[in-house]
Length: 309
Image 1 (spheres, rainbow, N blue to C red):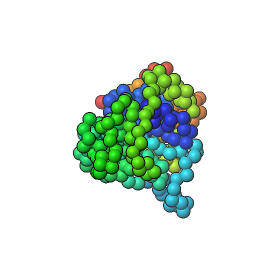
Image 2: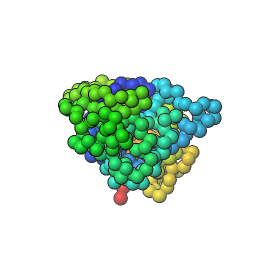
Image 3: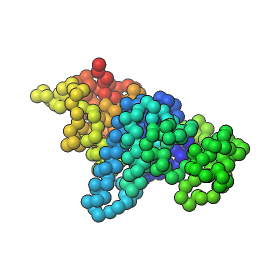
Image 4: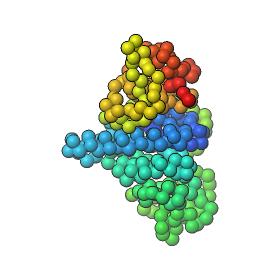
């Protein structure tokens, strides 16, 4: 919550989240999270899109003769927060290669992975490169001294990093470049009300992805895009029809945003950020989709594609 509270205040950071506890932990921040995956299937899609963004940004930097993504509100960082990473490794093993790619290659292009887990063994982290690539580690109180080396790295317990002796809730140690001596710190306690108030305060002031990253995510999406028939209406989506790499129009982005919406739907403000459309234009397209039977309004201001079996 402390990390989220600081990130949502940043005008140059887009936040994606994965919370396989049905959004129980990250859900209260949903109004500030650009994309939130709460099922293994959604997590796989989200991480694949993140890798596509990473690759597109790398290509753009290479074309510009630059090596580092200069973060700004127009070119924001992408931060992916994964709660209970071990659950992701168990339930979505297909996503592990993508998390490896983000951990290894994401730094220069400002695509960052933050993973929380109870016990970060190599097995729990998916047997990949993620654990070894994470050089910033936060360790709260542990029960067994041997867990210090497990979390912070071999030899850290002997060097004085005594996380098993932390004596109050919220106390922690940070191991990171520039933090090479153990020094205890304590996190703020954010109540549920503070989280709600903070999310509400910043919800209307969040940045969207840059155009290059949006195009990359759209091209990587597996969701079908409906085509207008001779009467000007949309045909029913074909589940086997993939999105082509050239599907980068605002209308395509709207349809993908609706297909990727959670069960509770996506807000109009989020659809505006995804597509770059004005509110009246989005409502016009929504009316067309509803008339064709492809979209439903879940609640006031929230929409999603109709699920077909």
